[in-house]
Structures are given as structure tokens and as C-alpha cells.
Length: 486
Image (cartoon, rainbow, N blue to C red; front, top):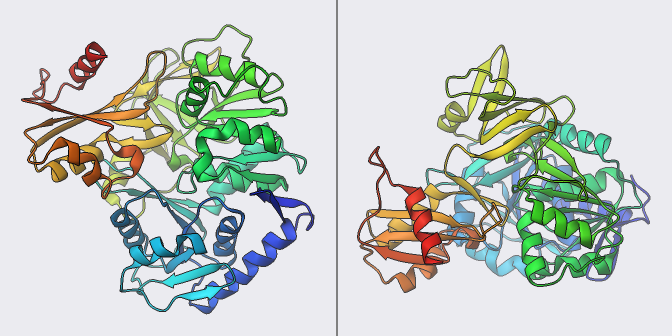
């Protein structure tokens, strides 16, 4: 155990030491085991980044199970779908989540088991087999209209944390921010790495996410993982003046493409920090490549993603699976100890996204890139219609499917709204043909089906969608229509 008195979590002005964290987690783990939770099970939880909510993760691990993070921002039906697909043994919640948990569980739940500040809602027994060695099951947006489960093992997680620590050492003296929602895999780097080295975790309340620079100042944060769009939002709100973050020594920028403008803003706000661009999909355990950034150097518009972590492999392939040379653009392929073995109960997705070559299993990232001998890999965009919205991975086909159902129409096209000089979206815009409901009601209808960040901020009724030469929707033409209207 780390120093029992050393703060493990600093939240709401109160510190929870490692001894208290461990003792609370052990007590909750015993409660889970008394309710039938065994090694290889999955246990879901609802948390809001409070100190006690972080004990849920550790308790689930100590019980021998893997965690499945639900989200207060998710519609009830989405939480129910994730629960059903995961085969979770039950749901662990704090007092602030009881009402939502009861709504998610409905009337089919068994007895509620309460221990101190946590309540466990048992699920109906699942026929799914145990999966030993699993650390967490993360659900991401799926192109078929259904969230995809990504199982990450402790072996994957240990490889990632070991690589991160070897490249950018942290110590118990550090204070690490916790900005990401716990259903977003960036959160794993924040809390797991912090506990790995015995540092202090400093969660930013979910209600204060846009105020992260102020929290970083007050808590004297030394290590942060920041989504670039959060930097842009804070800069527009004038919350990142020169010298605003003097204590920050290590700033990771990730989950979206990083632009020169973002680096320049952060370089002025945190003059003593080392900046690192991190890249990687959920399927490869949080992040997979790194690139050290010098804010004072001459930088390209989009910062390179650099080189893979130690022991991990990257290649660029063409559509036929041929490995491309330096300077040739293609799809980034990943292999190594951080890459998941496959999706959760989804053989069709496995067949689409994984390939075996020369005895190695490779994951198709869906990202276009080119290898530059001087800086490593450069990110060029996507080969599919996946986008990042405020750091969250979104399959636009899932949004379109939900819109067609809600609007009772046959055609809908969703495109990202991207500001000049940025590469990630603030929000989404939907073009809809002949909706059977008032477009003013669509957003409210969709909030019952999709997370908030996947609900289009604007709906445009059109007589028809433009078509390309192949007869498919011309999304570039729709993007151009948005630019002309701006």
C-alpha cells in the first residue's frame, strides 16, 4: 500500500488518504462478494467524480470483477442497453445517484443492498461466461446504432501505465487532475496512473468542467490531460491568460487532433510545462503514441502524433493490406500488448476492424496517417465517418439512425460543425428530409436516445440530400453549405 496518510483523492476541499481509500474499497468489495460477485464478473457503477465514487472502481477490482462505467448524461435506455450487453452482475451507486439507478433498473431489480455511502442493485442472473483478467468494459459509439463494447484487460492496462511512467515519470509529489467522465477512457489514465505512482487525484466536479483552469489554479495541479477543444473553449471565455497555470509541469493534449493554436494558448498559460501530444483509440488502451511539443518552435497547423509507446507497433497500410513506405498515406494499424483482443460479443465488428498479418494481430484504427522520418507519424483525418465532439468519439451513422427513428423520416445526414482553425467539432448539425415531427421537438426526442454530446445542436429541413457520383450522400457538399451559411 502507498503511504496510508498520503492523500489519494482531494475533492470538495477534503482529502481521502490511501489508507481510507483502501479500507473503504475493501469493505465495499466484501459487500459485492456477499451478493455473489465473483472473479470474471462485470459490475456497473454510476459516479460523478466524487471521492467516494472513485472507491467504487477499486472495490470492483478488489472483488475480482471488471467495471462498466455508466454516465448520468446517458439516456436511461442507453444505460439499460449497456447493462444488458455487458451482463453486469449489478450496479453500484452513491446516494446522489439512487433515483437514476432505480429508473435504470426499473421494477425488475432485486433487493437494494446498502453499505455506508454505497448501494448495490443486483441484476437478473446473466448467462454470459466469466471473463477473468478483465479490468474494464468501455462502451463507445457504434456505426450500427448500438454502442460497441471494448474489453480491456489488466495486462493491457499494465502495459499502458508502465509505458507512460517510463516516458514521463510521475511521483507521489504530483497532483493529477481528473477532468474526463468515468465512461470516457481518458479517465483511466487520470485515476489509474495517479494511484499507480501514489500521487494525489484532483477531480473537477462534473458541473464545473468548463471551469477547469480555475480548479487547476486552486488545487495547484502539476499534471493534466486536456482535450484540445476544452482549451479552445477556455480561451474563448478568457480563462487562460498568460501565466494562468504556473504549477503545471506536464500537460498531455489528447483525445482529439491538436492544433498549433491550442499549443500556443497553453504555452503562454503554462510557461513551465512540458507539452505532449497523445494519440490512440479505446481499443488500444487509452493512448498509443506520443510527441513532445515545444511551444516556442515553429509548428505545423496540426501537431504530429509522433512514435508508438515502447513495445508497441504501428504501420501504415493501403486498402489491400500492403505496408506503405515513409511519405505514403494510408490507414494506421496497431499491434502490441496494449491492443484489445477484440470487441465484446461482436464478431462482425472483429472481422471488420482486426486483421492478421505475419502472425501478428493488427487493429484497424480508421485514422489516416503518413510516416515522416523527422517527426514520426502525422495524423491526416479519418477513413470513415467517425468524428470527435468535445473529445468524445461519435459514429455519425448512430446519430443518423436515431434521427430517422425520432423524425419518422427515411433520410437524415449529420455533419460536424467545426470552427475555423480547429479540427474537432464543438457540435453536430443535422439535415433532415420531410420529417414527420416538428424539428423544434427533435432535440428533446433525441435526448431520450443519445448522450447529450451526440444530439445535433441544429436541424435543417431540406427537400433532398445532395448525392455524389456514386449515388451516396455528398457530405462535403453539406459541409460547404454550412460554411456558406456561416
